[in-house]
Image (cartoon, rainbow, N blue to C red; front, side):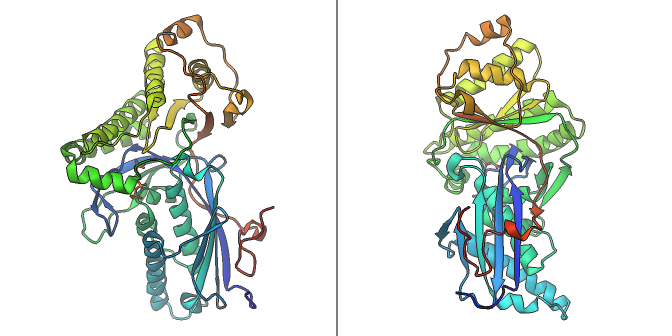
Length: 401
Ligand code: DP6
């Protein structure tokens, strides 16, 4: 048990992000350098966030980490890469400035605890929020002020996009050392206040093929993936940036759906094929297209990552009607009350015409387990209140309240 006070204790939070131009495939596995640039929307931390505390003390004899209350193996290569990278950056800064009061911290071991406010295995990009939070918190505790893209990226590629709020691009970069493979904000979270995000949780089970393994197989075997990276994504990055800057919802929505579909097409083009969508995912895709066709306008978009859960983008004036359509097509089971979590959504009636349009598909009771309603949100935050620390002064997890 520690006898001295810790040298430093910091607690931060970081958001989940959802890509609208997908990252799939690495050109360098060790440095986590992608074969194409990607672009994402940062989701609000009121609904989905990771909280991480890092404590350094002379008394600690080894680095240790607890995830959602359970101690994990700190020797995992990705964790080690993040720790090594942050200490390298800290050392670089110390050398530039000798009188640093924290310079002794570099030789100290660190204890880290991290919790999500959402189910880790629900396929909701928990690794992105987790590694972004780790990078951000370690940077604060070790006094690092430089760009953290590399630290977060070494944990999980998509994590570098969770270092900023709003709309974020991860530029693939050209250098072999990865120095120019960085995340940048395209527009802040205040830019498009009407944008809403609905997460349709179809399955909370852990995915069969993890992203790292899946994308390695795609890089090795899918000619479509190579074509996508070289001939499709560069123009899509420019077009998506324009849609966001001009708040062009139909343009944004159509490109989001097309890019999700192309990502899943590259999975099917992988040999042996990978399939992340299930029958309910496909029903959601059809529901969105019927909904848009009924309105004669692109009012709703879907996107899917490496799992069957749908992320829906729409504008605030359409949320209530679309949620009513989801309830109609996927009647909730006994959890009717708990079906909608997050932002308040008013109840809206479904017009007879829309009901008739939706009736062309069979209903799937219980197909959507629940919906999380959220919006675009800010990047990582520092929590100043010491009571927020997940680790006590002894560097061990505080008992859960
Ligand atoms: C489908 O960032 O989880 O969500 O770098 O191997 O950890 P690793 O992969 P990860 O991949 C995310 C893939 C995706 C698309 C995206 O978020 O851009």
